[in-house]
Image 1 (spheres, one colour):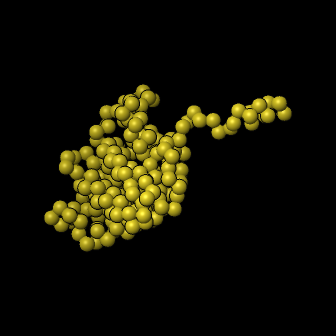
Image 2: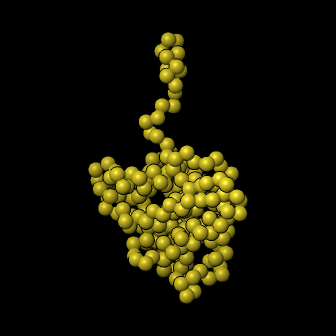
Length: 207
């Protein structure tokens, strides 16, 4: 079976977090969809609240701590990404935006991404279309058509109700299909890798 990696980024600030709960359910549904396509997946969870200080330091100094660099490589080297944020003031929260500000503009090119969010009211769901989707379009990612928003009323006794469960399953199927269509990721790109061979450089100089 083909082995895939899926980065699951959650930007919830509380503990426990409904944002993390939604991320986990999306990850599990995507894993099941990939299994149905004959592929296994390694889920790599990135809980941004655990890296908040390193994110802030990187923004100030321009240098990533070793632990943060490993997290950035996890995201940019995965076969697919699930990105989930709470909605504050009609947009993603600051930690979510600050983290993705650290990712090079072409590092997620053609990478399948599923966007999702949580918020206190269903009115906040529009933020996924006017804030989250444009963010990943700028990063040249392939954002699946179905986004998933969960308000407090979507959770019944701590589990997703039927409507939310349907959206989770539909979005997971779209993400799994996009991942399945692509070659297995070879990991994050090396910014110092030569794109031209030594022989080609010599030929250019001689000509």
